Amino acid sequence: MRNERLQQFLAIHKQKIDEALPQHIQKLQAPESLKEAMVYSLQAGGKRVRPILLLATLHGFNQKEELGIDVACAIEMIHTYSLIHDDLPAMDDDDMRRGKPTNHKVFGEALAILAGDALLTYSFQLIAGLKHPSITSEMKVKLMELLAKAAGPEGMVGGQVSDLDGEGKTLQLDDLEYIHHHKTGDLLAYSVVAGAILANAEQAEVDNLHAFAKELGLVFQIKDDILDVEGDEQTIGKPIGSDEDNNKVTYPSLLTMDGAKAKLNEHTSRAKEYLYKVKMENSLLEAITEYIAERDH
Amino acid sequence: MRNERLQQFLAIHKQKIDEALPQHIQKLQAPESLKEAMVYSLQAGGKRVRPILLLATLHGFNQKEELGIDVACAIEMIHTYSLIHDDLPAMDDDDMRRGKPTNHKVFGEALAILAGDALLTYSFQLIAGLKHPSITSEMKVKLMELLAKAAGPEGMVGGQVSDLDGEGKTLQLDDLEYIHHHKTGDLLAYSVVAGAILANAEQAEVDNLHAFAKELGLVFQIKDDILDVEGDEQTIGKPIGSDEDNNKVTYPSLLTMDGAKAKLNEHTSRAKEYLYKVKMENSLLEAITEYIAERDH
Image (cartoon, rainbow over the protein chains, first blue to last red):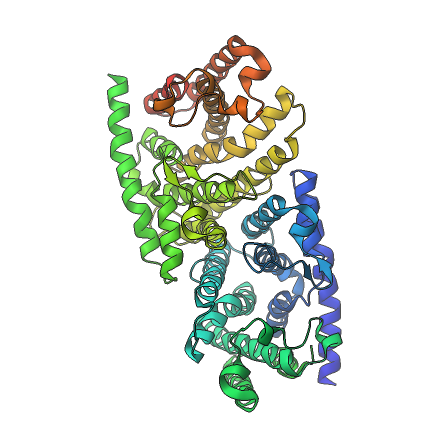
């Protein structure tokens, strides 16, 4: 039952985000080739986890989801730019993502770099230009400041650099958690916090939701690592064991599979503890947490 | 006399910017390797034209320059990120800039891409986090919205893509002006407009200053093209005739050298006309305009 409600929420709101993203690009006064490259990667699929987290948070504060669609799009643009740059030959050198050729394979490296830069920059333009009457200038400043922290040198980009720095070195659990917290956790956590800001939640609620979402980010990552060993190749959409082949340090490689699963349960429980402290209708966020911990892809 | 005052203003404020830029990076909670790569390119010299334009505008409205140092740094970070990405092998493939190895030659391509991304993102964090009591949230939102427009797909990145698209094609004067307006003009114009916003200038003044700065951007670019043919190699710091060697379309190649000089005078006059409409003490901006039109490097 709970799961049915979640599936319905995911389906409806994923579609809204899928529709809104290309519309934001089409209206730009910019070269068609650039817009095409931006839209290509925005439409390359993806579960829209970050937008869904934002919208589910708004929902939990009894706010209309419409209030958050544009910020959710801005976050998805940041996530998409990071994938485009990550896939470049100088970085992970990936030819395929989610079953489609990567941006630089289709548009060339120069345009791929610029499409990433454009998505990153435009995400701030989108938030600064929000027109909804209940979104104040103070909220916009907060949304942009925290977005820049989550995405920039103190967040996602910092995590990517730590990941680069760690290549070929023996990492400990602390190092691995630092990388994940910043490389993927900060933007996931921002998605929840942005929903709370838009809902005008009190600072104590924002803080607890932030702690919840940081735990959720680790749950997400540990589960990814587990699926890379135990998952079904068809279901998860990439070869099983690719982390091991790439000599990547993972939770199972550091802690054994049993240890990784214990860690998954530990962070899932802790995420829920923080969530239950928040004065909100939490059933959707709770269901998303369970879904992320128990998913098979 | 006027020129002496300008030289003094340039020297004092260039130094302030040179000092403030690395301080902003050092205080970041980010991997040292990333901070090193960011600081390297911020310290690789440069005339600090954009910060100076912002501070001279503030000065003309009788405001303390301190009010604008951080926004001036944010603009210089955006300019620097664009140079780092421009120099990459997939883009212009330049090994040297201003007599120093380019970022990717020192730090590798992956870190250079990430250092550019970090500078771009951090520039918004800096503006969002401004603490000066006379800078309101409304001002910050305006500053960030216009910065994203000037730097993103509708501005600088759009201009770079047009430039890419134009390679190997026969460009007309219209195409050339479109590229320059966006690739370099928009961020120069933003620098002046940001100064006016910080000074809380009225919209009519902001509009005239914007028109002034767009003309100034063309003056800057036409003069660059002229110097590439007529300049002294030692003084301008790059080989004479490099545009012709690279088959670059320039003002002299489209209009003859006499035509380019006439165009330079035309845009210089028009820039001043707009400037004289603004209710402000305009002597510094006037001197900068003349300096840009008459410089020998």
